[in-house]
Image 1: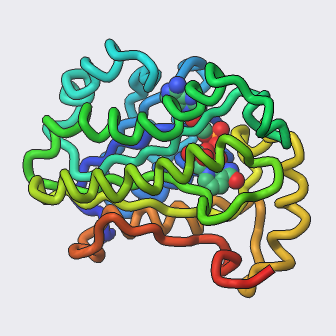
Image 2 (image 1 turned 60 degrees about the horizontal axis):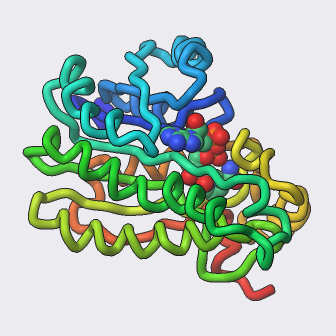
Image 3 (image 1 turned 120 degrees about the vertical axis):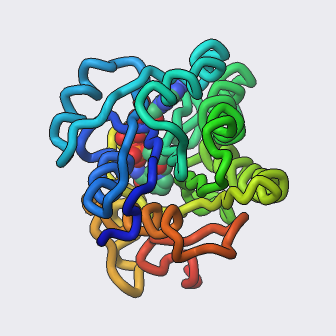
Length: 254
Ligand SMILES: NC(=O)c1ccc[n+]([C@@H]2O[C@H](COP(=O)([O-])OP(=O)(O)OC[C@H]3O[C@@H](n4cnc5c(N)ncnc54)[C@H](O)[C@@H]3O)[C@@H](O)[C@H]2O)c1
């Protein structure tokens, strides 16, 4: 019996089979969950990728900047499952001008897009799913350690710092619904989101060297395992937490 046996899980953020969300969906199914996916924009691509999962799940459209998509999400998910026990937020985006060392010149419009998609949406998604989580459950988001200023990560780093704070406030406000809210802070992984960061190679070169456990830039499974564990019954008293899945880099001085 798997650790998610009988659980109904909504996974956002599958774009390619290198997406962290793809590994989460695959492992969740292997551990016994019923999975529903949401996709953004290129839905036919997401549907094609979804067919590579052990049990091809339904794919619903969700742009977290669309109030209409968010307002109708619970009803649309409800056509496939009678409730949710877990929700995975694996969504991030920042315009090019907000990344790559341009920190002092980025316009507010671009910063606001990064914050809307990468930070505020954690709250929007949680609230949109609340009507389906009557028996409580677990919400997990994907983070990149925001306790320091990194090279090139720029306004995405600010967005992640906001995400870490939002995680604590959501944990505060959703505890009374028996809903746990946590983040997995992954090390750098070669996904579409990472490839769009100019200068991402700086992370690629240094991370495996710095990590006490080493680090494989193309292996999304360790981060996905942490997401699955946090959605299982094995973290019943943990909320507002950030679990680092980074080979140990966060614990080591420069
Ligand atoms: N790749 C890394 O190095 C790394 C490290 C730590 C954390 N993360 C985080 O993991 C999460 C998933 O990213 P990934 O690395 O798997 O890359 P990815 O490109 O596979 O996934 C990013 C997802 O965000 C979605 N998205 C973008 N704008 C959206 C919108 N308006 N509405 C809904 N969805 C939208 C994309 O469609 C895509 O599915 C992100 O939050 C990212 O910041 C990534």
